[in-house]
Image (cartoon, rainbow, N blue to C red; front, side, top):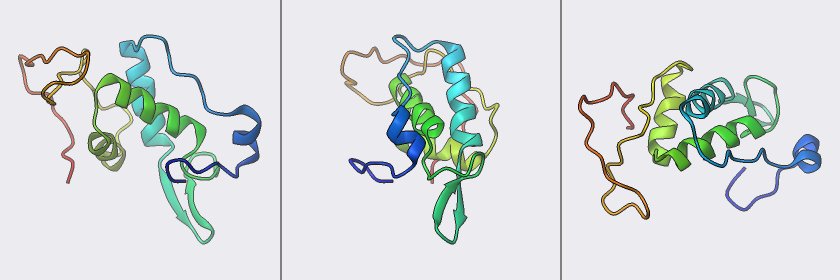
Amino acid sequence: MGVGEESTDPIDRVLGDLPLPTSVTPEDVRIAVRAVVVHAAEEWPSGPRCRNDGAAYPCRLHRWGRRVLETHGLSPRQVEALERHGNPFVHVPFPFPFTRPGAPGRTVTAPAVAPRWPRAS
């Protein structure tokens, strides 16, 4: 499902997207990493499906996890790297050190120790 496309999954039509937390906590980030990894895409003859629940990819939980991680400061490439890495227990630092200069409304912090991080290719 691309940007701006509406899901054809009946559950999505009835329930819509999960709301984002008002402020992202370390627990939200841990759950979001698990949601992105566990609800990753699996190829089916009818197209990509969620490997956990068989819904059209990306399912509600995958989309929620991706939005939480991007709100936390990860780039789409970093979220995709987490998904490819496949470990639902990867540690994402909190607060996340922004490497993008001039991120609007964000403070750029330098981490004391470089985090172990799956590389985006």
